[in-house]
Image 1 (cartoon, rainbow, N blue to C red):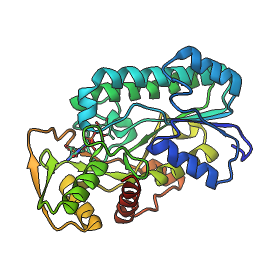
Image 2: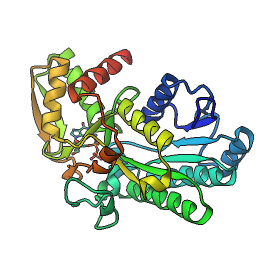
Image 3: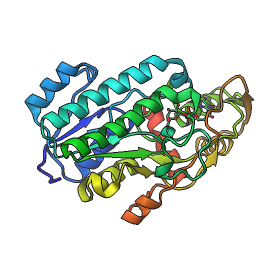
Image 4: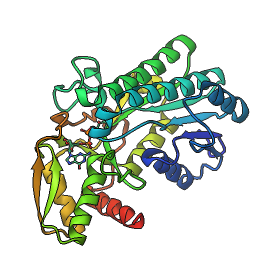
Length: 311
Ligand code: GFB
């Protein structure tokens, strides 16, 4: 991939896509194309085909997805499976038809079985039952991995799949009903501090463990893989994470420190815990020579700053 290459970032306004855009611009890549949702509906096959026909991108980052936290995944089950399957089908097929040189497909660590041994190695895929709260989303992401693999085998494409762990960073979704845990807790804890409320409610037991990667680190890893490796080098897909996790209770405590909130937490057991632990085995990525650089507390402080700019 050259700095003059034509690169399409699908989903450039989201948490991952916006980080990719920043990273590409920082790396001197100046020929980037993107479209907002209003300009191009990625679930519309004909519109996607016309876009590829007109723009002829050489490289594609497929970061467009219908995403959300545990409650959104569990509530909008049809939207999560339909929209994700449709978007990725349309983009991957159009990338093949228009001779895209390399495509990077972003999945999620929820593709692994609910009770997979920890840390989760790439070859644990499809070795057990999925977590029910996000099964439709996970099935769509598994289909994306398999689709990239099938196009590589049958048509000689170079479509690489990466599985990031849970993410956080600028441009996150702070809506309490649909967001992931970090933006939700940033908002709840900030509001409790502003209103001098001495408790904050945490969904579930606070015991599940999650690994969190800062979105700019993910973008850096994607660029590292895209510029140095082929899909064949990477295998079916590769995990991207930091190799460490924390309980939700510990994460809430860290956020309270960042925000400067002295109150305590109460737990709402009517809300689901989801997967008990999601920690990725990152030895493959480690062998290729990439490591995350943002410390968790620094990343949380940056995310809190981003939230404050949105107030
Ligand atoms: O981030 P989160 O929604 O997604 O929740 P998952 C992680 C954990 O935090 C769960 C708890 O145990 C939640 O019950 N939690 C505590 C909260 N308080 C809150 C809160 O106020 N809001 C939210 N959202 N959670 C998603 C999947 O699973 O992770 C997706 O549904 C995707 O498919 C994504 O894979 C990365 O980690 O449980």
